Image 1 (cartoon, rainbow, N blue to C red):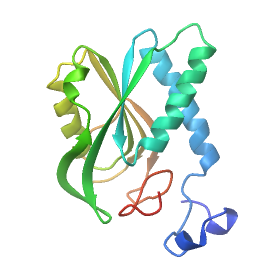
Image 2: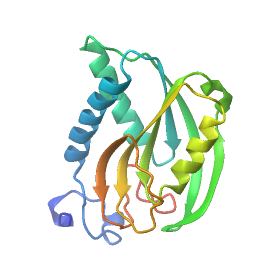
Image 3: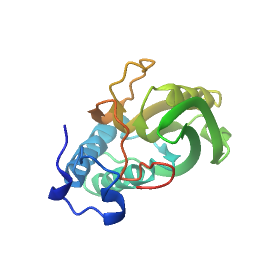
Image 4: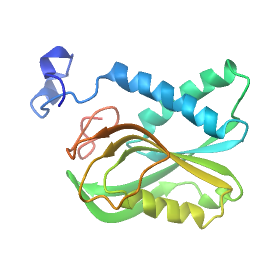
Length: 186
């Protein structure tokens, strides 16, 4: 699956490390707009705290929130939003370590009694998200939903599925759109 690199403008310093373009940018943007509508439909009318899982989730987070804000301006239903950030680390090189570390972010106690939308770049095995959800739920939020741009089809999955999924992808290591390899190819 995917598209040949010569169909796209790829920086020379990345081209040698890439095989294919799985999902073109325009398709990501269209799907993100649709996910924003789905979030509005399900969470509209509630004040939500949008929690970005850094670093990989920042681009999807920003684009998803931009679409939600546009819908807020042009819809009968609106979502008052505040934003928050958390930084997780579970990868070393191209392998999930299975060891999830929260290495930055605000105090999660601010989520008590709130409606929380966690925005993530990719669900690989699901272990990282299960760990984050357990941490968040300790603070007794009113509701927690998860939006992930990508979800891998992998035999290593623990069976976790987010509430909102952009694309299901094969069990390949992917970069771009803020997903990285040791901080490169974001």
